[in-house]
Image (tube, rainbow, N blue to C red; front, side, top):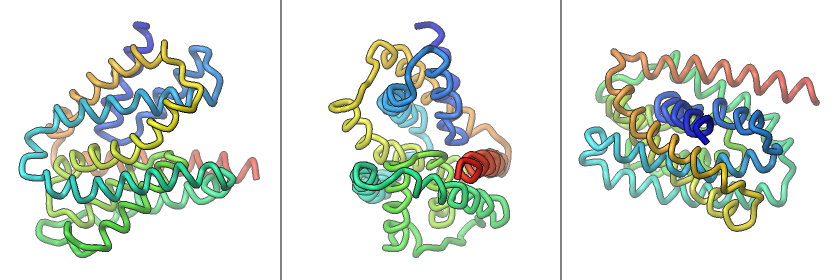
Length: 246
């Protein structure tokens, strides 16, 4: 239990800072003896608590952003539901092949085109294009999920005129809503290991709360650069796995 709580703590921080919790928590669950399917659904359910912790830890960045989180959160939840539905009727192989390009493209966007103050795209935070993009990213998150937070961060950074820490705070909550739909589904119908959920969720909750404090102290564009570099590394790994097995 202590080991799982420690894993959750590290993964919660990683999730809220660079959006890659599952590269820590999923392999750890496998190492603790859970089968792959049980590890996946258990990890998804426990990740709900990262969003709770991130919301509590990001209160300074979320001040005055309730409306944008509400608007985008609705589309994220709908996208997450659509992605979970697609998972039931289409082969996962489709997303395995396209995921490296999505993650890599989003990472390059962050790396090569840093957002400038007052310069936004996708119609800004009230634009229909942003809502459509959030929906599409949430479909990906609900269906496949790997590094979905990196893609969401890139989309939001292009449209929101906020600091990287502010964009990250919105990303954490919007992404949590997309993930919540799949988590509820797994909780009802999946092989969740509830004994593992408790300590892992406790670590996620604390890590999610600590992560925003770390993010807001990172100098300049280091948060954006860290997310981009981690995303490129994950894209290479996903591509190697997908196309080698193909």
